[in-house]
Length: 162
Ligand SMILES: Cc1cc2nc3c(=O)[nH]c(=O)nc-3n(C[C@H](O)[C@H](O)[C@H](O)COP(=O)(O)O)c2cc1C
Image (cartoon, rainbow, N blue to C red):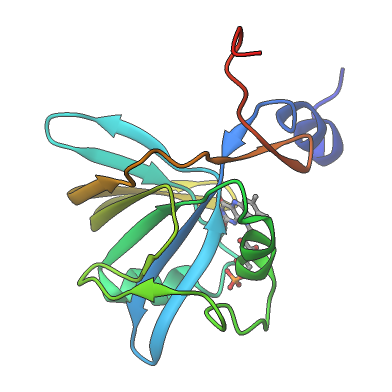
């Protein structure tokens, strides 16, 4: 099996992930981008990472803000995900959110993680961004998350739950 763009994408598409929108208070208003590369990293200190592409036009705006909010998307957020991945879209139009010093918190997200930029590492065509968590909250009652796998969106089903 050769490693090329196609096989890399195809094989990793089998690894299910959650979906987030990473938001910030940009100089000209709210900015945000869909990202599934978010990983919790360290408890002490509390650190997370996410990996923006070097081609992203939104990441430099988030970077300038110095802080961002990771919104974990809910199962009904497929359309929101597409919007926050589309170039030129009015991403926040019709999306309810509260303001937060780190970045907009989408009202019906599953969870919010407010972060301050901590460190950056070069990683090929992406950057590994490490951020310090300053505020964190999950919705109550629990909301089902959106799952991304094999290029499609779905929901989480607990085994044995029928
Ligand atoms: C489910 C999903 C996950 C994504 N994850 C990432 C990611 O982790 N990093 C990234 O740079 N782009 C990711 N993207 C693509 C970006 O959302 C999109 O390319 C980007 O927002 C393009 O616009 P920009 O120039 O405004 O950044 C993802 C897209 C989708 C649909």
